[in-house]
Image (tube, rainbow, N blue to C red; front, side, top):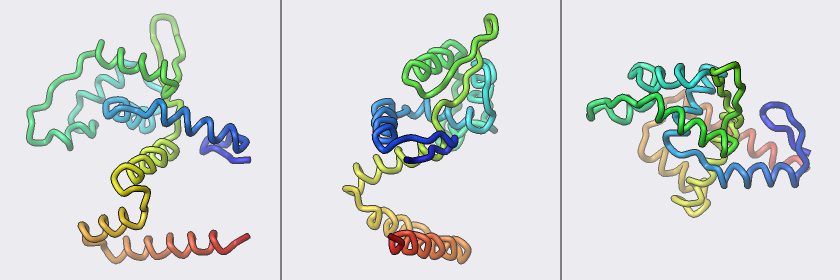
Length: 163
């Protein structure tokens, strides 16, 4: 039995099927941006999400497009993306009259884990070591970051030595 981040208990088979389902419905870049807002804000209307997407101070899009002129995302575009996300099972939807309130149906930690594993498999042929060595080689880690890395390695070694 495995516990999900939400505390739900799943059998090995259910856990495998859930991860397989997540891989089939891997969020696009736009969907991931909406999920990040929903994780931060909690359940939100399409209007709220659209306003946040168009606010350069709140949107990760501003980091990626710092050099480019920001473009506004239309309400209907946000609505359509969120409807597709609902069909994929990435978000849940509650109807309150004409207003639809959306919430993330997948956890941030699980999504990050799946996306990271797919990235490691594709870019590093499944080698976490190559990823870590590249990351440390391209970025000068602070002493506190190195301490955190050492603590994580110690924890992994301890978990692997336990029966």
